Length: 421
Image (cartoon, rainbow, N blue to C red; front, side, top):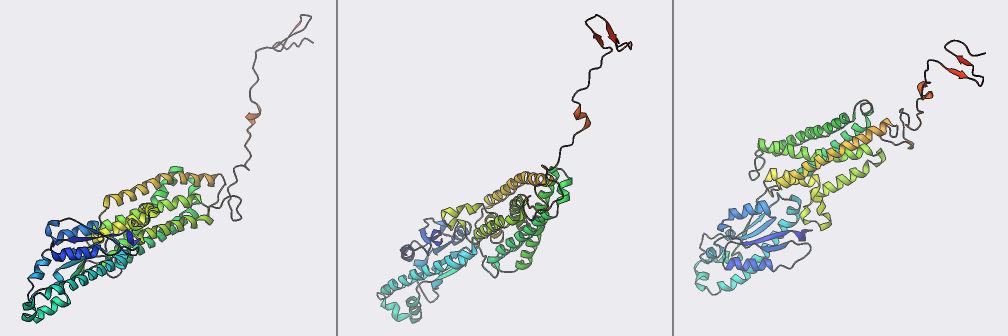
């Protein structure tokens, strides 16, 4: 998985130091447990700040040979600082667990290896400068032991204290609270489903999931505000009012999309099958949050649509400013919430119909199960009601008189009271 990550080598020096470090890094043998390297041939106007911004928005990390590194080394004096040569940049805000566990160590190992090889080469050049060796022993010690070095920066700080797990913990606790509310909704609403119209059942179910998601999300956002605080870290972005409401919306729409999905399953399944959609939903969503989908094998790229994946990307962007994919993440979450709301119209109809026909009971057990119990008669066992009028499909025709004729030609009239007897 780490092999799919792409790290950049950026040469802003364009001198012997930059060329030497670049070649050393690009010659690192590829391995499945190591990320790949790419020479990013961009000038960035020679500004390290432009590189930082690019890595924050688009990358995992980079080794940057700073502008003027070769010139400073050649003109080294007593004030020379080796750490001004290279800057190692990583971005924990994109995915803190992977960055801290794999990519940051890979960056450090690569630059250390490159510096060691450069130091060996530089020693040969020092031998050709005997006047330097004799005139400045302190500078000589620096140039021999460490002619160049590096500083490390995190441009999307999201690795301090509990930051790497706060997103996982917040979403998972919210999902558990949503599951409990949905099960209670199914188990305790028999009378409501029997007494109201279908559109009212759908509206109540829709409102329950959405409002509960908003309620839980508000407390999650407040917990993050209490945990992080405006002065939690001098390097992190300040937790402003705008970020609080953005975080509230993000958690709410994530839980609402998942809540609608699970509500549809719970309404049509009997209790023994509740665990199937629950486990699949929890495991797949947590897995998409623990790793970066872009690094996963192609089969698992469908995890991009998981609410936790999109919610965590927004969560990390709000708090660190890293890897902005706002339009994509928000559109996926809103689309899933809307689609599940439409499907909810069908599943609430199925739930209400099976209750009214005596097919399912309050808990969702189907007729025939040993746990089934319902006072509503089964629709096939109910005899049709026969009305008296149904025995007479037509009324006799009313006539003013009835004449009975015989072969003798005599007549009989009911009107006159003469039957011809």
